[in-house]
Amino acid sequence: MGTPVSGGTAASLEEYLRTSFPDLDREFRDGEIVERTLPDRLHSRTQVLIAFFFEALRKKLSVFAHTELRLRLREGLVLIPDVCVYWPEEPVSRFPDVPPLVVIEILSPDDRLTAVREKLEEYRTWGVKHVWLVDPHSRRMYTCDPGLTEVATLRVEEIDAEVTPGDIFE
Image (tube, rainbow, N blue to C red; front, top):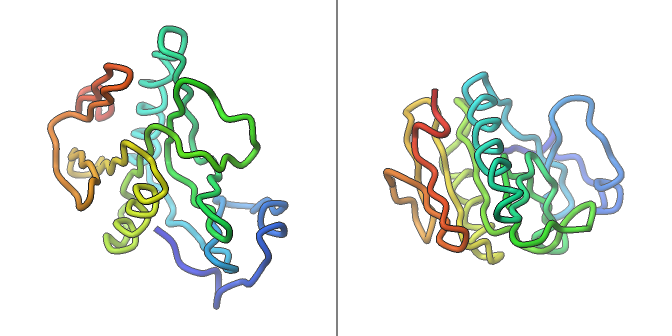
């Protein structure tokens, strides 16, 4: 899910938050700017379908889906989930420091499972109620609470929503 930029580019949090990157946005871990793995076509398509699933519920349920939003989990840690969902209110901060209801990470072919699991655990520890991992290549879905558990559907009880493989895989 990420490696330090060429030897680990050191920066302050403020510098990082002011920086736009010419390619894929990067995360920030305790003074280091960290590259993310490049998504492929299946990753991208799955990300769109997940965001659309939740966006379709917005008017009825006040859910707010975001893709690749910088989240400030703690001082010195900014992570970027593939999709996150806020409910019942949308955060007003440019870089939210309040946990969303749902965070979804989508596997890319170059992801290392140990790094992905670490990132998922960071979200869970921060207070995200629903932390999910989706693998578009194997068409599998997992919850993280703690550890990864493969599931047939992904449920969000608070809004009575259920994501099925047919909703997010083509």
